[in-house]
Length: 442
Image (cartoon, rainbow, N blue to C red; front, side, top):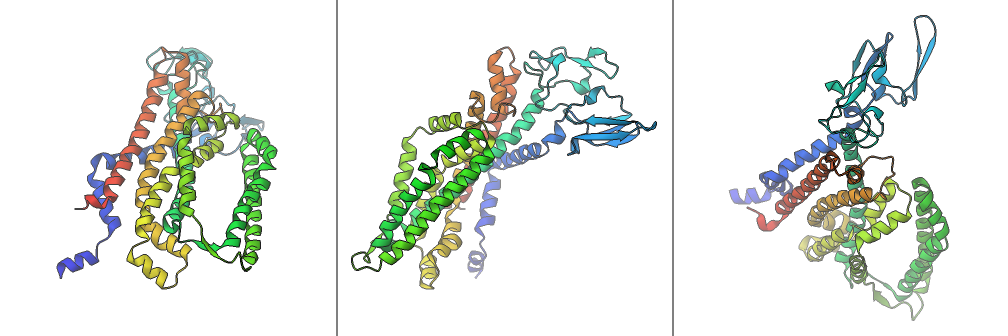
């Protein structure tokens, strides 16, 4: 009786989390990842040249937390003073009280007094509120040094975490959607479970070809122009092309429904979904992915959105293969057969029953994929063809170090950040693999 009760009350999610907690490196990595995410989220508060709070001529201001472009202050004598937030030199203002960010520098702001690769332990200069050049006070030291322009490395490191984590998460979100949809369709339907009339099948095939032609081929100059112009225009043109392609395919499918009633065209045929998806995966695997990403990134205008889309659309194959393999097994299980016998639609069975039970291996691939996306983004930024040049990333910091080999801090600190982030994701992926693997069940 006790054994039966325990089996009935078994919760695989709680069990998997307990198994994950037993893997100490993976569990500690989860906390490190949370710390990195919190640091990226609070980057404008942690590293900012604007004060968090300043009391100036009787006015209480919060420049680091303000979305205004300028402050218009009324002094005691009735005169007005305008402080433009983006160009104000806060460190030279004679304030009554000021609270600085832990790192009082923004990543893109230059400190000309400390330009030319100042190391963490080198002599650094500071201009005080009286206009005098003095030795750098410990409160304002560049704790990780500067680059050739005098930009603070520590500030760039913190803000670069936001870029790397954002690109990693969103790129793999795109890849996950593609991989889960295509993999689940290939695994569940195979080559023989999805049937339609011969007329509708061939009309859909022709519709896909026609949709591609009218949606993309005839609009290739619009897409090329949008690719080199800006992210917003590119997204709009892509959505328009996808809408045209879908509309044309739907029109052909509706025509095929009527043609499917004709004597010769009403014969039922199988749609080889598994073969189509598998051959597509093989095509992507046959191409050098990083070279493909380099080519597209070199043509496209530097943009975070472009990098995320490029990485996402080239990283879905591993997720699709694992999902396909799981659904090939799950579709034969009793509860899927019962759902089909009860008259549930195929889409409902896939989304509510099959995919939730087959997503575990894909989660492992997604964790490894985020680590790969962080490496790819850093590589693109190192080569100068990733995000815009005015955005500081870990890869761009390492690239600055390549120009001055003696500036070891430009390589060591961002290199350690990249290594730590990739290692954390890999350890979490290994922990998930062990926790979700039934062979390791105790």
